[in-house]
Amino acid sequence: DFAVSRGPWLAAVLADLRRASGPKEPGGRPVVLVERQCADVARWLGLASVTLPRECAERLTFTTYTRRPGSSATRVAGMLPEDAEAARAAGLRVHVCAGQAP
Image (cartoon, rainbow, N blue to C red; front, side, top):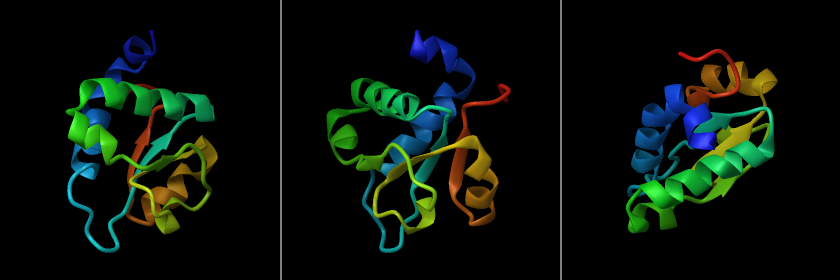
């Protein structure tokens, strides 16, 4: 049900998560998943773990919530919609999955 509800964002988010699972460059920036609930960020990670190749999924370190994803050492960071614009302005890869479909 979660994957179906996030259908409009599915391909772009999974592609970015796969890229994020590659070799980590020094100073690499995380993929930011914007959701209203931390549990939905965790659902994205669960979905990635069953759809991406195992070795990719195993490298996806994450936090389900942060207000400062640019300073996070993880590859994936969740945040609330009200903080998304600041993440975009910082040049992060942001997927707003809590609003209107693209």
